[in-house]
Length: 138
Image (cartoon, rainbow, N blue to C red; front, side, top):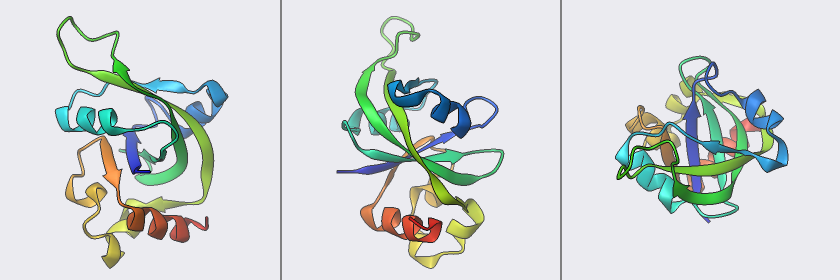
């Protein structure tokens, strides 16, 4: 199974809101970048995803999972290729991991969060997932 990271500005959609959505989860909307869309289209049911607070906080705060694979974005104009994926919260990280910590960890130097900072939906390697999990106390 693959791992992922999605970024959200807390004032638009926060970890607390994701948790409040419960087991029914919610769709991930607003993606208007083709590489992010392609990443969403690769996501499979049950895959785990880091939830990252961007702009405010700048930290990975929790884990969500894919509960519905990519489907057409109903808000897109006809002919536009955008998709949604549905996620449900799994658990908060025992200790959030900041971007500063990630940048200071040499083994994470090639992580998309560093190399493709603006990309809102990113792959995470198994090794990156393991390292961040250990840093967070999982």
